[in-house]
Length: 106
Image 1 (cartoon, helix red, strand yellow):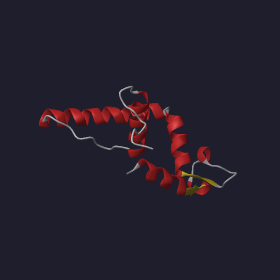
Image 2 (cartoon, one colour; image 1 turned 90 degrees about the horizontal axis):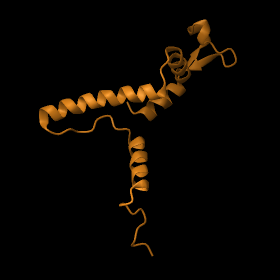
Image 3 (cartoon, rainbow, N blue to C red; image 1 turned 180 degrees about the vertical axis):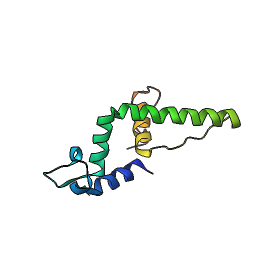
Image 4 (cartoon, one colour; image 1 turned 60 degrees about the vertical axis):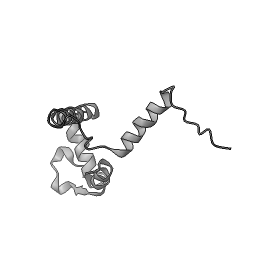
């Protein structure tokens, strides 16, 4: 599932305190969203955003290696369009061979 949509869904689903163990309850709001609960569990388990990205990267490298071994080429999988755009723009910004300004503009 697209990460953006997944985040929206997790923020929209509210779990009342009566369904939660004591350590996860929020008495001010009467419960927590799934996003809050996931963050709390990640923090408890010592999982950081860096380790999540590192694990995803490892999985992709394995998939690409298998594809390349079988077909001699590989196709990108699970591409986050927003993240890809940011990386491409950062590359273009710092690559001296790429001119970001359109020469045809008047």
